[in-house]
Length: 320
Image 1 (cartoon, one colour):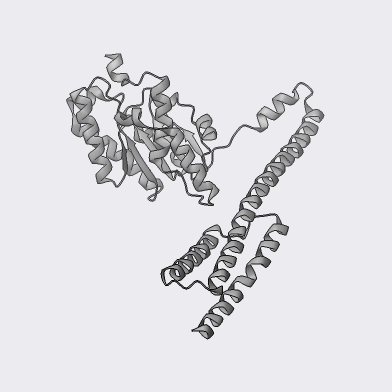
Image 2 (cartoon, rainbow, N blue to C red):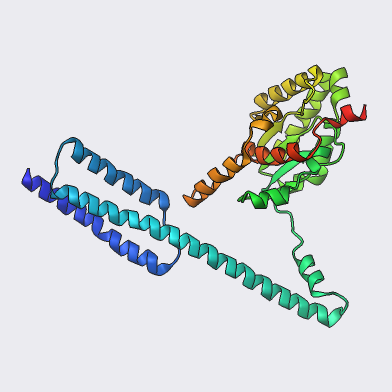
């Protein structure tokens, strides 16, 4: 057994010898690019499993010490990775500031040659006008949704994707598909948060089948633009427990299930905790998991804000 333990120790030393070199190389590089955090965690898990096996078999010898030594060295890589990620962020921020300064300086020079009436503030503000990007997430709703400050909330909650508010005052389900084609389709969205129905109380009460057809036409238009588009259908607020609105939401939920879309019930808004969602996202990002935020989490953030700041009763009822 002693010879077996000796060979096991040699194996561990051979495996572990590269890690100190890797730590030094990563520290000197000052960047997390090319480093895989999941791979490091996988190696750590393997060493922990080996140590656990030693304790179970009560093999308290020098091999166990080598396991602990290797584990400590590998874990050092995590601290270096976190340090390098911070350096990458700082370097990225400096590069952005540098580029803005260069671009603004060039534009100021050009404008000074042609127009002496523009102030520096006007030039910078015009330069910062955003261009809407394709493959974004779209908030698509009516009067309530249009008031939600999507850009501010996205910045506050560190969304790692582009999101635009393409809602329209008093938008009905009958007009939604045409509006989508004219205003949204060109962006080829990868995600759609759809909150339609505030203007359709009367339509649904008189002709639920027409409501369903119009809703399905909208979803067909979205999928025609991007068949892989993530879609979430948001229920209509029902603060007064209207039977008609309850039935409308049942239809929306059924449509969501039939179209493989998520269904988000606004009745749960009081239970949502956007700050917890933010904390979970920050933890995921710190672990190197750059996944896109689920539409359910996005809806939680946007509509929690809406419920705290706006009257959420359907417009059609208010108008009646």
